[in-house]
Image (cartoon, rainbow, N blue to C red; front, side, top):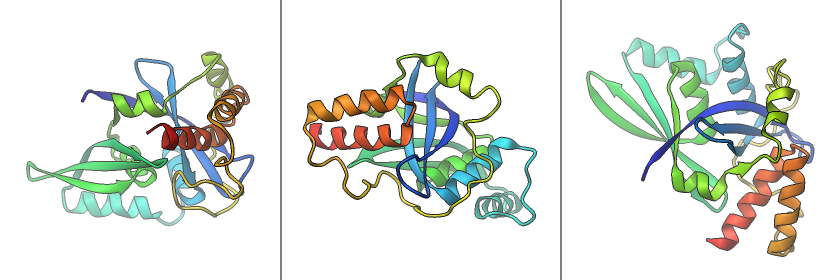
Length: 208
């Protein structure tokens, strides 16, 4: 299976669920977006790594892992989002020490937070992007909205969920597929990527 390189487009705050965020990954050689629901702590950690000039007074958990790895000459080579099951993304961190490569299982949000700190590339498989990627109706819209880094939240206000792909209470299980597709299109137009990710995950579960 071929790998597709991803970049981080930004983080959007959930309009529907307190403490939840959508991490927006962008296909490097295409226009598809891969939104992933993450918790507030991970959103904050990723945002701080993206902002570069923001340095917390004490190390965050991912900063501690980076310091630990540096001390013992462990390098994160790349992160691969390798599986999507029931709306949950699974990732692997590819590490190297003394020219010996190891693969470590990780939550996608943690893996990406570490990839940023090691300047490691992020990949997914083409079949995952085919299944879960979302096309924007107007691809320039998100780029324009992020010119001033408005899409990246450096100081999340609340702390809540720490899981990925979980359906909110009163979710979409009662809707038909046609209704889900209509709501997905509406969510993408509104740039509500957290909602779009949840609807997409529900569609994926039914069509798999």
